[in-house]
Image 1 (cartoon, helix red, strand yellow):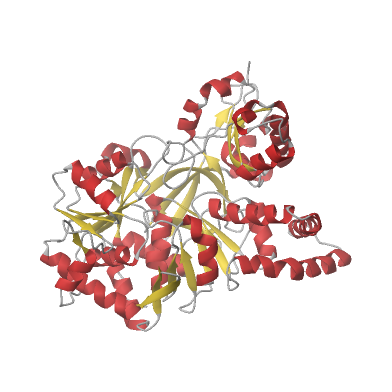
Image 2 (cartoon, one colour):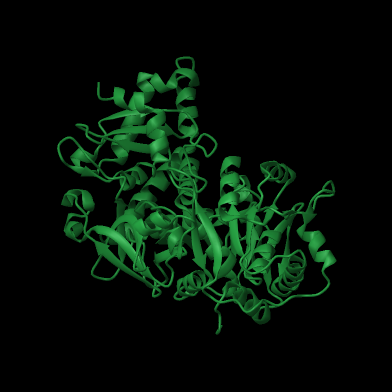
Length: 594
C-alpha cells in the first residue's frame, strides 16, 4: 500500500483493501464473534465525528486505562484522525501511576474499561480532565458517557484530518525499573516507519490470524497488533485474559503468535512438566530434547537422524495441538529469550523470530525474519534504523559470553526514522540519552560479520566482583530460568568475592517437594529447610554448568514471595525491578557473605 504517512492512513487503506475480512474477534459467551475491516472503519469514523462534537481537536491528549478491546482500537484510530495523541495505560498499574501520568500528559479525555477505574479517575479531580468515557457498555452506567453512546448519537462519518506525520501520535509511559514513569513522545512517522519496515521480509498475509494477549499499553504489543497486523489485513482474536490463553488458543487457532519471553518460557515449562508426569514420556521427551538441541550445533549420526524424525512424529503433533494446530511462527520481544527455548520450538516446526526494541525506538530495532535467522541473535537491524556500537569501560570477559566477540561489544546506540521525539516534559533526561538524533539504549551488544545484532546485557546492571571481574547478570538469569523449576532468579555480587542468587522456585516444584517429603516439611518453613535449599541449589548448578567459574552463584537464598506488580517487584511489563528486589531482600543477600 502506498501513501501511508500517518497511523490513520493504515486503517483507511486496509478497510478499502480488505473490507470483508475479519479484523477483531472477541468472545461473546462461549464463541468468538468478529467485526470486519469495513464495519470497524465505519463505526470508527462515526466515533471520530462524536469525539469532534465533544470538542476533541488537534493537539489534545487522550488517556486510556483498559485491557485490549474493540472499542479501545476504535478510540485510538478515531483520535489519531483528529490529530490527538494517545496515552495508553495498564489496568494493573497502581492508581498513583495513573494520576501521575494523567497530570503529566494533561489529558482532556480519559477512557476507562470499568466503573472502578472511572470512579478512581473522578476522585483524582485532575483539572485537565473534562470527559471520562466508558469503553464498554454498562447498563448501570448513567453518570458517564460511553463509546457506544457516542457512536449511536453520531450518524455521520468523519474522515481523517490532514495530519502532519511529525505530529505526536503516542506518549507511551515506560514503567521503568526505578523512579516514576517517563512519557516517550512518538510521532506518526516514527511508528509508521517501524511498522512498514518490520513487516517487510515476513511471510505473512491477510490469511493470517493472531491471538492478542500483549497489552496495548506496551509498545511492542501496540505496534504489532494495532498497526502491523491491520497493515497487511490479518485477523486478531482478543484473549479473554492471561488465564484463558490456553483455551483461547484452541478456539482462535492462530497462525502467528506474538509474545514476550515470559509467555514462551511458560509454554516451554508446561510442556516439560507434562512430560515429567509419565516416566516413559519423560524418557522419550528428554531424548528428543537432547537430540534436537544438539542438532543445532553439530551433525547427528544417520541413526540419530532417523530416531529424531520418529520422535518428532510422536511428539510434534501434541505440541502443535497445544497452540491450536495452525501455528506457523512466533515473534518474541521485550526481553532476551533463552536460545534453548528458540531451538526447542524450531525443532518442532514452530520458529520463534526473536527481535529487540525499546519504547523510545517505536519500538522495534532489529528482528530475525524468514530466511534471515541466526540463533542467539535478535536479528538484523531494520532498514529504517542505524545502529552503532559505542565502546564501554569493562573487561573483555564481561562483555560477551563468546570471547571471540568480546572486543566488538559496546553500548547499542540507535538513530534513524524510529527514534523518539523526546521524553515528555523532561528536557534534561532527554539530553542525557538523545544527542543529534542518536539514542543511547543502555544495552550492551555487538554486530557480527553477517550483520546480526547480539545483546549481552545492560550497561547499568553489570557489576564488578571483588576480584575485578565484571558480571552481566541478565543473560545468566535468563539461562537459569529455562529450568521449569525456577520462576525467578536474581544474581548479586557487586564488590563481593563471589556471586549469589535469590531464587523464587516454581509452585509446581514446591508442591512436588512437599508431597515427596510429606510430614517432614510444610510451606511455612520451606525457605530455610536445608534439604529444599540443597535441591534448589542443585538445579542452579545444573542450569549454570556452562557459566564461567566466577559467574556461577556460590550460594542461594530462597523466597516463596510472589513477584508481582502490586508488591512493586515487577513492572507492568513484567520486568524485574532489580533495585526494589535488592532493597527488600538486602539482609538475606548480605547474610550469604557472612
